[in-house]
Image 1 (tube, protein in one colour):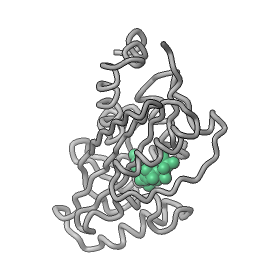
Image 2 (cartoon, helix red, strand yellow):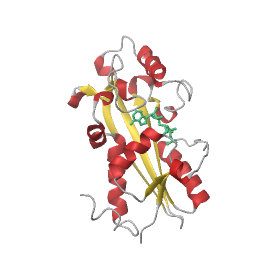
Image 3 (cartoon, helix red, strand yellow):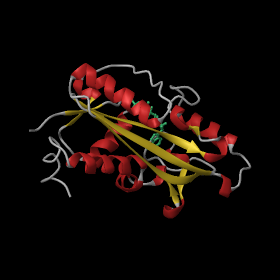
Image 4 (cartoon, helix red, strand yellow):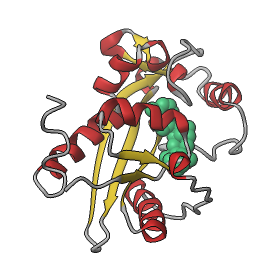
Length: 207
Ligand code: ITT
């Protein structure tokens, strides 16, 4: 059985990455479904917020729904902005300004104390009430200036030592291979492939 899965995100940059990573025609976005909604993300964790988004859209549509809740944790700032990453500095504030705010708060902080990670929780909610979540992350450091024009959000200040560049400087394929979102979606895909109706979804086309 082929069934459409809705990905409950209003963030088109995220959606682009999700499409590349999952490479599955059965997944549609809120925009494609013509769903306009504002969901209050009042959970205390990434997992709770991902579940809130997936449950809301799942209930509204009656379809299998996935959601992503993600963010940047900076150790020196006690893991801020964390689950408030989208709201940090104001939801509509351009990322050039949000990034500068964070860089300013880290002025004079040495390399070894600039550690940070991107975290991503993916939730899936089924019409029969089953729910699943996974969480993955990628470790890095906060740089000293914005670098790179790829990606979105905090990517230009997130430096990945193993690659010697920021996520904003990585090609999308490269970012997706190592990113929090890439890892979480791959893990979720692995778990879903074990269950109907997903077992047949990816089999011929990928991997
Ligand atoms: P939806 O809730 O509709 O999915 P959103 O942008 O509000 O969209 P979140 O609540 O999960 O999503 O907030 C995630 C924020 O964390 C996002 O807006 C970015 O600021 C940041 N973020 C998450 N993943 C990122 C990535 O891969 N690169 C850069 N910044 C990222």
